[in-house]
Length: 284
Image (cartoon, rainbow, N blue to C red; front, side, top):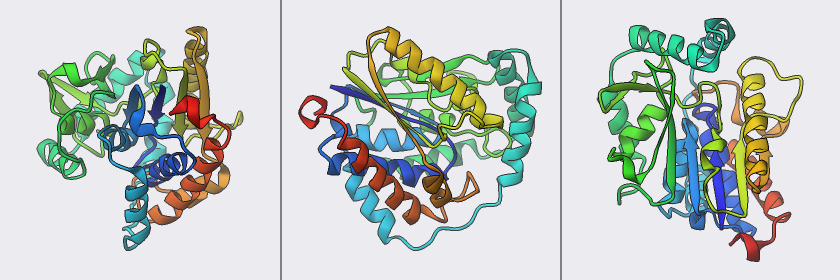
């Protein structure tokens, strides 16, 4: 059995991640049969669909056939949030709490509308057994990982994981306001340390670039620590970083799906290449 991690990074990564998953299936690696699928932020939506048994090739074909999406206009907001992160506190928890206060005070309303919007993008059937979703408690700064035992609706958990401070309203679960799970880590792969899987495949739009800056650098640092921890637990890990060309296909605006067909196609090609490096018999 394998485990799959799908990272956050904005709406633009959804199509690319679906493409990577479709390419893996093309090459004989089926993420629908994974022991665990962990999704964070945008990756939570992708994770929910594949964990529910939706064929990523069908999702990829739908993206390829769809008309061009609308361009977003949130680049400046993301740049400002990234610039504020490191000065927001001395630790990840402190920074998360600072962003949590910002989210509670300055985010727009529309919490239930956000949950309903997510619900429309999900297949029926409730929580898939293999699915895990990461979010952050806005008050405590603690990471929260939801699974089928949490007693939370799937759409609400995913909406919480996708609640980018300032841009989307925090989502209340169990009386707590929850926000974007990618604050501090886009992957949260260490949450799967206890999963019995011979291989963990981590799919992230973050480039493997030691010169990365801003949130990319922070996400890359967190990812490296998570991979080291998984390897200490005896796990084999394959990290699929987006290439420069794939990131260009996604477009510059994290909240835009305008280039989704290009992003999906680039991801699918990458997924096929990765599948060719893994033994299908063992991974299946």
